[in-house]
Amino acid sequence: MSHPIPKLDQYQDMREALRDLCGNFDSAYWQKVDHKRAYPEDFVDAMTQAGWLAALIPEEFGGSGLGLAEASVIMEEINFSGGNAGSCHGQMYNMGTLLRHGSNEQKKFYLPKIATGELRLQTMAVTEPTTGTDTTKLKTTAVKKSDKYIINGQKVWISRIQHSDLMILLARTTPLVEVKKKSEGMSIFIVNLKDALGKGMEISPIANMVNHETNEVFFDGLEIPAENLIGQEGQGFKYILDGLNAERTLIAAECIGDAYWFVDRARRYANDRVVFDRPIGKNQGIQFPIADCYIETEAANLMRFKACELFDSKQPCGAEANMAKYLAAKASWEAANVCLQTHGGFGFANEYDVERKFRETRLYQVAPISTNLIYSYVAEHILGLPRSF
Image (cartoon, rainbow, N blue to C red):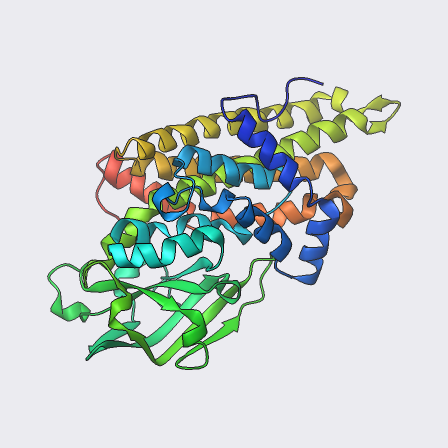
């Protein structure tokens, strides 16, 4: 067979180490987790103990101090191994808000414990049921009273909260009518979930198409210490935006891992499956779609590393991060369809893993930012077209 997928690169030692670890969690493991709609605790613990999920935490706080490029390879390899990085990617990037905008005391207290896995920071509460991506109109409020903030409101699509110790929360501290710019007056808090659950915070799981633990969250008079405010009051929206480029680039890498997985599975099956006394891979009707998917994935991969290069050199990378996420999500979804089609009826059988990965990769057309919003970003910020909303 031809050269390996993905191609050999400067991260090969990392890739091999990750493949050794991920190889301990085979198809049967992920099928069982998916069937039970369970959380892959053993896998996440293994990744944490090996230090992979602390890649972006500086060494002074107990992490590896690696760049976004290396972190993206970690996410890619999880998905290329047949796993689902969505179970743990929050632990990789949610701490970024704390790292960039937290006080020295907050960073010294939380980051080493996040690095070791003593504390999981896997969840972020931003989206609300009535506002969606119109974040500046969120209705969850945080009102300061003495040395506490009182939280009231509701969030939706809040992932991994049942498998996290801490949560990043965005809430409005100044009413929308009282701010000069709609992006002002929102603040970021770190919430200790064990202290909050049942004491002003309730959660309601949302059953969904994939094994992705996500919830509605309700706040009714939740009290959190004022010291849990991250950065300056009123600047939370800016802090959230600051971390989106890393998130989108890491999600792009997950999609690239999926896409390579689908291409690899499709080509292997096309070589092995014999119909009419010949491997189906001899037929151009089978070959060409797989080749097309490989080409699209290679292109998305280049944009992923371009975004990483800019991010790691502290240059603006909003356009590249958005385009990488768009291209990678598109490539993975097209590869999923081609892989399923190549397998025919067997693609629907659980044992082949195609239908599971098919469901998992579909999410990234919608989240963490939808395709249409990326189009809007490119139209307005790159092409200079008038704002459409």
